[in-house]
Length: 342
Image (cartoon, rainbow, N blue to C red; front, side, top):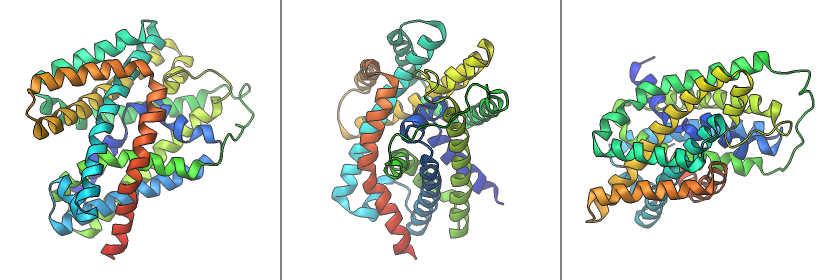
């Protein structure tokens, strides 16, 4: 298998595996709370990620597209493309708020400080990063992604191996039956940012076969990780209070230092996700307005801090879900584009 296929697959996977994923809160909100049926939603999400990756890369390759706006225009025309581009900007701002809230929730859960203090620390740290070579910091994401992936796998397998089987033996009650829509929503909001990255990587893909391979590898890997976190949280869901950061709660149950280790993994995920999304918002607003860049940077950090007051789980539930509904347009167009290309 060619090296470029592995690289593109890795970047795509790292884009989707953010702090919401690593915290377990996304998996709770979009899958676990719907009961055992949601495993089918995970399978559908894996297939969706796979098909979308192959379709986006192949269309960008065929039309030699490097700019995401150009890709949207080819896919759906000017007006829908402008709407999706606006939604992506809003979603990136939402992600920044989620990461600020997540850092506050994590520090509060582990060491007891106020959630808003933790959110303020994240916002200030990101502001300092934005003042310097943020592109260099973003490039480190690719280096840190394996740390995040390893941390998730290690904690999941450890908990599955040493969980309290005699205490948690009953099955989860099925709470709802709209797991199909939730699974599609999960794919669609992730594609709002992941498809931007895929288009920028099209020069690494030379053939349709390579595009398909990226889709298969990334879809299978993401499905496996979703299944692992789903399985771990499913054991405890409804039995104990999981808190704002479920995976951290479960990690701490294995021991304080085990919890510290996973907190570090979470912070790496939060920092890389916050910097990437915040920088994306600043770049988009800077290109479309005449506002001073430093003023935009300050405003983005203040909004991130203020938005964190809504709460980590609430932000994931509402911001991600609402943007996901808008992202259905993009997901539907990408899937229809597969038919057109055939």
